[in-house]
Amino acid sequence: MDAIRLYNRAISSYLAIQAGLLLLAPSMVVWMLSPDPRTVTSLETFLARSFACALLLISFLNLLFSGELQAIFAESAQADVNSPYATPTIYATLLYNTASCIMLYTYSYSHALSSAWLTIGSAIHLILASSGMLLLMFGQGPGHISKRTGADKRTSGFPFKNVEADKRKQR
Image (cartoon, rainbow, N blue to C red; front, side):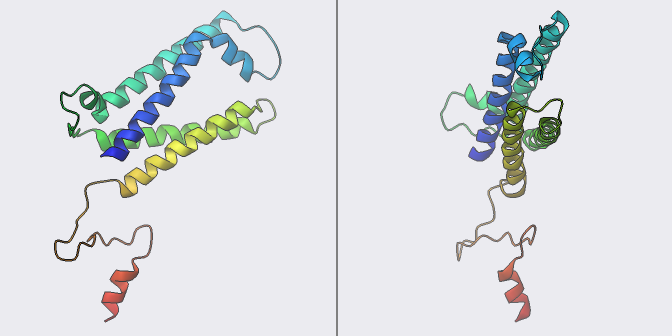
């Protein structure tokens, strides 16, 4: 469960960093992303701060539904908290990071909004989405270890070919 905990903490930290920047300096963020120098309106500042509050809420809900808040505040250090919402939380954050990566990538290469910050944000969302996909593919459950040989008994061929199972079938 360590990889899932690390993933959820990374997602929540990144969302909290984004929210902190938008709460503390919304005019600076809007000014950095605009292609031409201009003054930031009060509506843009309000929308940036509202979006920051929404990001903080998403970060908190991610920690809450994945069971991380229970694990953080548990009495013992070895507390194993299993949340029934851990896998749906990974699905939701995977969809969010994939959509954000695609959106930032398309905006960063348009002529009107070209910015290195958008490309960096797209790369971070790509890394988080990729790690979420890897968790969904390989990080579920403890596995089925054979008592006799010590080999892993999960012999699914997805997404790679299972050469060992094919050898046994050919015999």
